[in-house]
Image 1 (cartoon, helix red, strand yellow):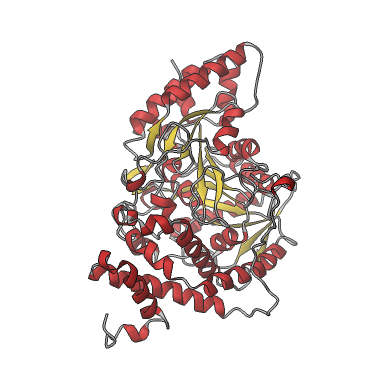
Image 2: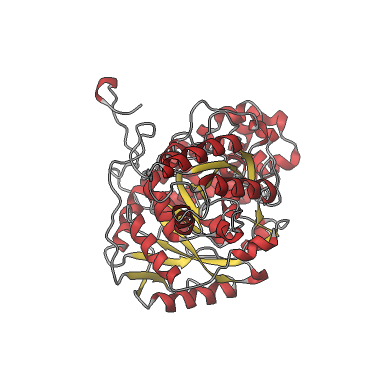
Length: 464
Length: 78
């Protein structure tokens, strides 16, 4: 019998329990499978459970432990992946009703690498349809219903990695893999009070993943700790001949002992009050080991650039999908229009966005000549109620466009929970780093997390 | 949408023409409400395009994508 509290433990804690012979990989896997099958549907967090594959991998990994073979920190750790990553012999739906029977012959590179590192694939987790690429405006935007927040099922889980966002705090998986084109890891991780890492563009292979925007898509982990994200990143990062956007460059591994962290003035002016006060308290904690310095984001139309890049590329990526009429079977009304509107983006606007992108990425990079990372609240609000249109809930609130800037420039980010706000829902703080400084910002986030005790995931075990 | 629609004059230039282009191809799928929403979304993209065009760019400031030549016997790319 697996002690239930272990299911919301860190990757480190799970690994220690396995190596201390307190449980086997098969026992841990079965416990997660049972919980994923029971709780996953309540949260609309799961699409497919890969039970047989998980059992076979778990048995192999137990045999290896018995024989003295240890693949490293992920050996025996069960995980789930967003359902836009291909897994052979199972559907890969991209969250879209017309693609519920879609299959691929190969596993995504990230799945291959995680299994090679000793991970146990439990299943495919929910995604907003087409990763939100057509501009959804409501939580109910996937064929299996709206992603429900692990802290309140009447609140949205966030998107587009909605299943990874809620499955991690609910103890349905040891960790999860999501994807971000513009906010799709940071948002569900922030709304659900977990650590979410958006890697540097090109650091992690997208082979086998749905393409929304070839120049902006990133694949990354959601975990209960920043250290967990680090361990997963080390397993999945690296060049891949199957994805020519990947770069053959190792990640920086030299975090500063006393980093300088950049902050924007008036960053909390238009956020929910609790988001602002939690952020201010976070800065006080960070001053334990860091220097806080004011910075200014260079003036650029970041949101507009992101809109045009994603819209222009999505129009091409989903040209056949729209042409064939599958767009008509999507769930969210806005998505049934957005795919058409993207086809009307003039080439000049897309190319000019790419020209501005080159200019802004140099200017944003210069910020890191004086700071080691940039801080900001992860989101301006807590998660919206599940039935409230996004605009109605979120539009009165605003953050500087650091999320758009970071995504357009391909910079890494990590969100960490920093308290609770309205309706007792989590808030988060995000560290944004220089390209390839992933491990550095994860280290700063982990040091912050080590000084705080904001989230008790065991409360989620009783809730479901 | 008729040319006398008061909202049309507030749309960025080209919105109506681009919406007409989409309707020429997919109009049989779009009811009145969706045509209106289509215009809103196209107007958003047009506004974004105009905002981005306001950024000063020199002629030699090219886009940030790099085309690579390809030879199957000299590349690791699959």
